[in-house]
Length: 164
Image (tube, rainbow, N blue to C red):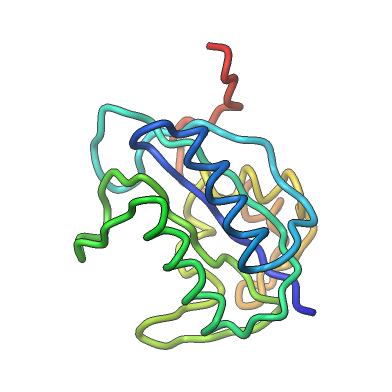
């Protein structure tokens, strides 16, 4: 079994329900969720939108290869209603990113692990630090807590309270 870290985000439709559908699909088709971060609300990164994102990170145990994992993630996103337009930054019903797959480094056109921008994004680093603060980035050789301290992204990432 392999350990992977996945980032999940949503800002369209019923955001909380989208996260629940994603978690359910991951448990059913990818593997056992070992740990989940809190859910955070954050402003869009790289573009403007009226609705903030809900983001979280999960630690999953899987028997899938990286390519199989990507295929299952795309299937889950599609089942939840994501339509890929080719545009990089836009509002979406769901986004599931492979942040880490063990210590593996993959740099292919369709698959890049570790996620190439995670160290620049507070909305990824904050939930990562909830569950694996001392895990070391395989390329940058720094812990996620160190990367969060050094992160130049000053966007607002706040704990989500579904009651508000």
